[in-house]
Length: 269
Length: 340
Ligand SMILES: Nc1ncnc2c1ncn2[C@@H]1O[C@H](COP(=O)(O)OP(=O)(O)OP(=O)(O)O)[C@@H](O)[C@H]1O
Ligand SMILES: [Mg+2]
Image (cartoon, rainbow over all chains, first blue to last red; front, side, top):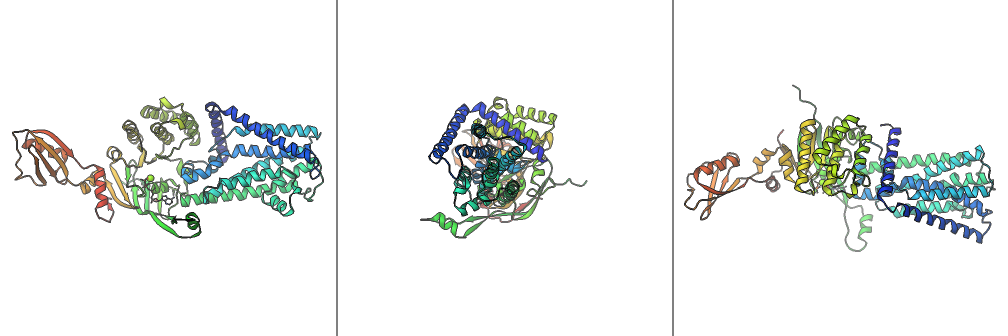
């Protein structure tokens, strides 16, 4: 079976599971509502924070909101798509992971559809709303250049976030019980990227950009779209570096995933 | 006539596990993590066997004997420490995906289905996953619905199914793609008699109509008695017996025991009994006889008994497989009894 068919099948699984959730979980709308409320609270926090310091690092409130929304869109979409990976550590611990290895399709695609969660859809829509609002208030033009920057930022951002989540699942092939560590990495990373980078200490900033290259992928495109001064001087090469780093990181993670599955094959737990 | 290639061919298959030694007391977990001490468990040791097309083979042994470990290697889930296995011409752990198309796997302990989907959706997904032609799918589903009686719960999400319903669903899921080999790890665990009957019936039908080869592990010797002519016994990772279930009975079954209660005015003389028979007078009207399995069957023994006395009641202990296996474990024969 080639990868197109496998992707089609994965999408079919996801669709059926979403339908089943809407049908059998009466609490679906409640979940969606609860999650949206949480996101609104988060945004209000950012707004209040920036009213105290109106020009943090030279950024206005609307600019920060745009950056926040850029990041949130990628993160929420990734989080929706990767939900099943959260279950991998538990499945590895109990041996339920075995069953993914008895089927004729990609283990990874099966793993990300172990659980499909629609509760993030509300947050994704909110993030889009916020993005449009900030975009209009900043009176930015939608040129072919900005469009390219936006799509590449989102595609790379989603891929990166999913890769980071995957990294967390991979760890569990060796050390089961890693959920806390993963959350510290990925959720922590998301929070950091939602504020202007250059207010962080230099070493941290450097590690952050290179290790988890979300800075290049989200921060720099936003910076260029907003036409802000670049504190680090990477702006001219950032649009090329972001996708390259993403590809490298995704390749590394997929290699590690394969290693992890092989390790499972050889230890059985 | 050349014999066809075996469906499964296993040579000197061995699998060991390293188990970290547990430390007791304070900081036990930390010390276990820090020290490199570990014990080696020989889960499967040097096992060799073949399975021919159309065979139904029972694979039995005590808890921890190595049954599931063997099965995981045959499905390609686990890589062996040494030895080789060929399943349908493929090496399972190297050609896992190709093999998956041609085998059906059921783990009684855990479901293969999507827990939140109605059974019907799960089956349709599998149809796409295995690219089952429409007519084959329709026919297989119809058979499964009929023999396994799936209709009452086809629309129910898997997580709401009872154990027996779920197992029937899993079984249906495993055969949709017409597998040549069905590997079943405890397919009747925890089921009531009716559900067991359904499943055995289904497996028998499948074997008869499609010639599907089957390897099944079980702790329920009823499964073996009703389904498998051939049985393999594994103990502490070693194959201790491989052969005909009746041969197992002959070798390890001990005597056939028959207790009789005779009419009041009757008595049985214990002198001059035929060869292979010993008898004992228990109470006024009851006797106990033991028959050598090599010379007698329970049928011939009862027939003989009816010729010597008027029987009011007969109780036969033909030695259950369970008893035999217990004897086998206790017996100190170390070599595998290969009947190949
Ligand atoms: N992943 C593992 N890591 C360490 N030891 C293992 C692992 N899997 C199995 N074992 C050990 O290997 C041995 C054989 O286990 P296996 O599961 O094959 O037994 P089994 O015959 O299926 O038993 P049961 O009847 O209880 O299902 C046991 O001693 C078990 O503890
Ligand atoms: Mg087992």
